[in-house]
Image (spheres, rainbow, N blue to C red):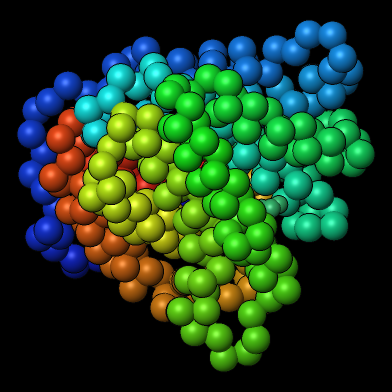
Length: 311
Ligand code: GRG
């Protein structure tokens, strides 16, 4: 079932009015991202054929490419030249793909379906899936260090991505999520997990796009605000899709959260309030980037898609 706002009497008043503008060019859409990812995963001597095949299987499978698109859109919103941000776009998607591969392992979420296909450890084997994650992380930082210019921007991108993917963010959030929330946990407890597990990768995607464009601190702060709100709205809709989504559309097993007694936003607030909250967050996200000097239209459009998505 598609998420719908029809039942939700929310008037979004703070949404900036979209002005006709240059939209992100087709050359920087998902086809360009996939071509750059394929090129980043072409290894020469030394990489075993099976490992390279499994890395490509995990990364090039039909995901939404939200994080790399956010890198390019943030770059355009800060007046950059998005082709220069493509290595950063690839780097965040490699980290994201690694996290999905490891999350699907039996020791973690134990899933057999991802992006509409068998998970990496099912299509290959567990040891290969672990190594895929290891190698994708290393490749992500290699791309940033060697293909982002100038060197100061490369170093900042490496530091920010490392922090977002590390113990205080993605990995820490995952560890707390696996540990589970105590009975009586609140929306703040849930947000503390999701801000690290889901939100940090969205925030860093936007910031990397800005850094490559030479954004100033105020512009990076605006991108951070957009990313925090976008990330939380995305998580709320992710939880809603687990309740209402169709497995073929979502591309992964649904109904898992309730089956495991996991605390979710619809579980905490109900579906209608969850949709209202996601809608309000998206309006705030769009308002946050209102003053950026470049083309913000793609950021507005992607934010809208998050609350109307069916996958
Ligand atoms: C293993 C360190 C480690 C972390 C795993 C990614 C993750 C953390 C868990 C996956 C479970 C999950 C549903 C997380 C919430 C949101 C999320 C990251 C969804 C997947 O992202 P999408 O929808 O995926 O952007 P695609 O396939 O479109 O790229």
